Image 1 (cartoon, one colour):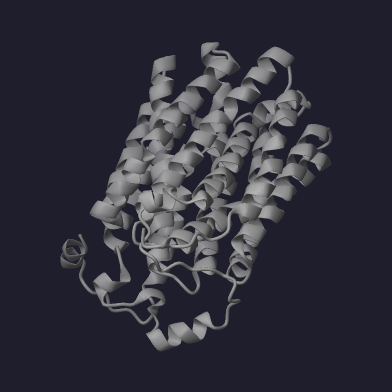
Image 2: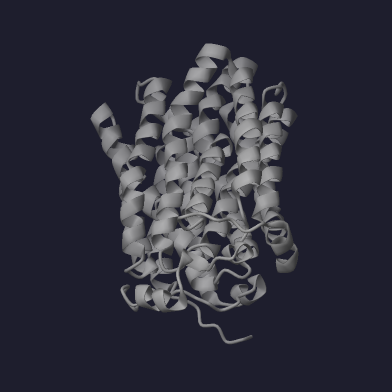
Amino acid sequence: MSLHLEQEEKPIKTNFYYGWVILFMSALAFFFSGPGQTYSISIFIDHYIKQFGWSRSLVSSLYSGGTLISGLILTFMGQKIDKYGHRKMIVIISLSLGAAALWMSFVASPIMLLIGFFLMRFFGQGSMGLWPQTLVPHWFKSRRGLAMSLLGIGGVIGAAVITPLNNFLINSFGVSNAWRFWTLALFLIMAPAGWYLVRNRPENIGLKIDGISDEEENRVNNKYAPQVHISNDPWTLKEAMDTKEFWFVIYLVIIPSMINTGIIFHMVSIIAEKGYSAGFAAYILSLTSVIKFPLTFLGGYILDRVKVRLVKMINFILLISAILLIIQAETKLAFIIYALVHGSFMAFDGVSTSVMLPNYFGKKNLGSIRGFFSTAMVIGSALGPLPFGLAYDYFNGYTEAMLLVLILPVLALGAAYLASPPEYNNF
């Protein structure tokens, strides 16, 4: 595979390390994963319920079903990225996500909505989210925490911009045309930019990882705390799965995905229950993302110097606090405080997971390993909306569901403590 990729990628001469272009393209991909993310789709939910008269439980079930199916096959996408390279796959993923958005513009029945949810989640949250997180570690090592935090900026901007943008597009041009806007953007921007600017590996264009010599790399590595573990071992997915630490980390990624998706999916309804508009819900979702912007930089700085599992432990305390805050929130100020706390959690959660996987399991088979984790995350997302939807239909509110899920981040504190770097034994 490496020889094939090297033959099709021409050397690039620049006055700077080309990894920064790769990082920009990866952040752009994170942005364009937005149409398939829950924060984007949530703005459409109430419109489907009102237009077709479907129950919230039905729509939640369809979303969970589509998300679950997409998650179960996401490891397949990771394997294809490892096999064919990031350059080819970004074009395929972008065009597929654009086609999925076009499908969503014609939805008129529950089965069409189920298929649409599956396509949006598989190519959006799943594939478009997986692609950059498996590319950047090949280009950055000593500054991986910084690179991953900068990568996250694309997602932060997407969450901050796409939610109010969707609200504007729907109110101005209708649901169908809002989806078609994303079809055009993916076809005309992301797909061609990916083909012309992305390269698979620094070695393929005559560069070294980080753009520095071995001597400079050793000097840079010595600046960081020795407790920061960065694996150079050739872990395979099967080898990683044979360690207990792998499964602790799986739990650490499932729980945030489940809880975040459940709350964000129903945010418009949660806000409406307290007497506020969909516009205010969009504002809260946007604010949650805006606070992530500066904190992703702080997260990258910390994760280059502090054990990632300790960051995870502290972060789950923030998630517990966010759930308690939204249960009690009645005023706009209370919701704003919730948004700041939850946004802080999501900032550190995204960066820490992106750093944890290549640092623990290396980068040789990162596509397959990250694909498995992405499957777990998508399954977690699938499990999130339904309990909240059922709680609303049966209890006329969300408090019971939120109290029930509180136990999960409490258990995650213990899982984070036990998730130390695994030892490679050449299996």
